[in-house]
Length: 223
Image (cartoon, rainbow, N blue to C red; front, side):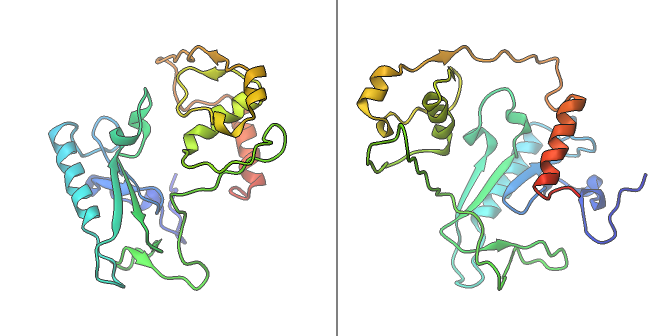
């Protein structure tokens, strides 16, 4: 079946026999087309993979801001710098994030420009976020000096009285809880979930798939 969309370019329009690297979105998630991992992979694991990684990371760090003529303040990582665990291979091979700049990646395939301008918005997401906690049990008035998005999940589990998996990333933000709450509610941990390596990572039951589609439709991603 021909899945090409004649109105928009998509992954079905790519010549995979000539594609070494690609991005599914315009937000710095770069995947390599690896032989043996991807359906039509052409990049050999090992030396060829590592050379390509060095080449792309070097070029990303050399990108010039067309408005100022100065280099972007870029954050460029390979996936091993950020992720760990049994599913690292599913992560983007390179993660690219411009820092301290207002920029929009272009989706215009008719130009060689990396960025575009818009009268509607002046940039995309920033690396820094906002964390607010209000109401019971958050009765202390405190300003956090530094935290991570990975701290949110274990903190919420603790606030709800749930066990925290021992292998969960992040920490409980104890400083936002009153001393009495900490004394009355000890941290509880559970053993890490056992991973069945023989089971497909991406398989969903019929009921799970139906629920997922329903949620995506409600959010407007599916018609």
